Image 1 (cartoon, rainbow, N blue to C red):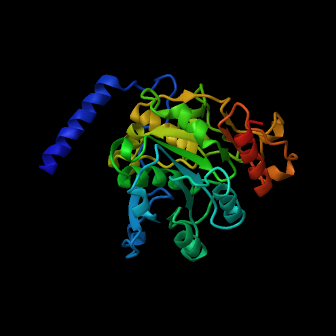
Image 2: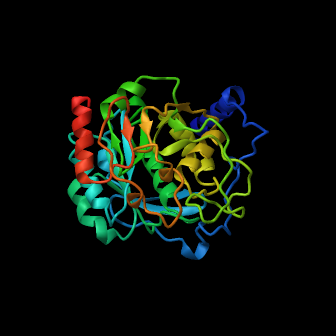
Image 3: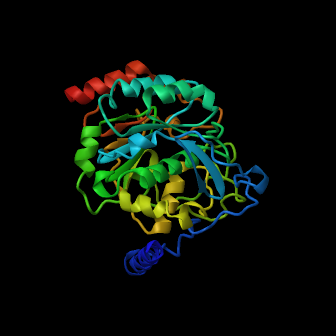
Amino acid sequence: SSIIQSASSAAKRTKYFEDKIPKPDPNYPTGSFANCTADMITSTKASESKAVSNHPDASMVTISCREIHFRAPLSTIEKGGSPIVVGVLSGAGGKGPIHRDSIRATWARDRKGVYFIVAGPWEDIEKEYNDYRDLIWIDEDEVYEGEESVLPFKTETFLYIMNKYALEGKAGFEYLFKTDDDSYVDLTKLENELYGKVDINYWGCCTDEHYKPLRDASMKWSVSHELYPEEYYARYCQGAGFAVSREMAQCITDEENIKNFRYNPFEDVSVGLLAERCGYRHTSNCELIQQHRSDDVTQRKQKKIQKIEEVYFIPIATMKGKILQHRVKTYLDMYNHHKCALEDC
């Protein structure tokens, strides 16, 4: 019976793609349909494969030919109950714990469905994991830059876990929203913007053009020809905050896609490539998703050696006319944004 249902679902999905899904623009060749190979540096070699831990929250997913072992509060996730589930990329160490505490005390306070995705040694976050039950941990090094970045694996593991373990349909969630731990998110405005929308599958501050990859190795977001030989990226929603519908999450986390999709080191570009692979177009609103705190061009063209906190002073907090503000730098800064969200300042 399950085999027949699976075959029927696959046939329906194939027909849907044939009938409904727009084809990629042949004038802008991207890597959206490229698959990973066993010899890629990020692929799990046979000698590296290991059994899933016996921890009650442990499981594993293969993403871009890499086995990702994770632990997540599955019993909580399975209950569902949040129309929009938020995944916050965060560092296990450094400023990560402070950022997480500031979010728990402000925009995630008294809210269900906000999870922090971390990596690094399990021992570093085990107590926090057990105390709060709002962490998703992946067994990887906390590498943020370069061509072995953990950020795509964090993001795609979050999409996989929520789609697999949350209740089916709207009882589980309608949208998944990815953001970073230096972002303030007005969840009420976000829900008002997306809740009940049937025509939005991929939403955020998105590119309207097919941008070319940066090849200058001195630039923070450069990528080599070896890793990404194509001339263009797919259109994508920028990583400070973007939403994907349950329908799109189902396609992304379909085994043929998430398992075989070729790794890309940038999580927002990676999801954009998967969106094109699945045939979903974005809905963009860059007024509501604020990437920067000012118009200072130095914020937009960082070199690898340049730290953002060295570039500019912190402007006055405001949440007028926006859902998300990125680059919130301190606990007090997060609180001031929360105050403005409540008082409309």
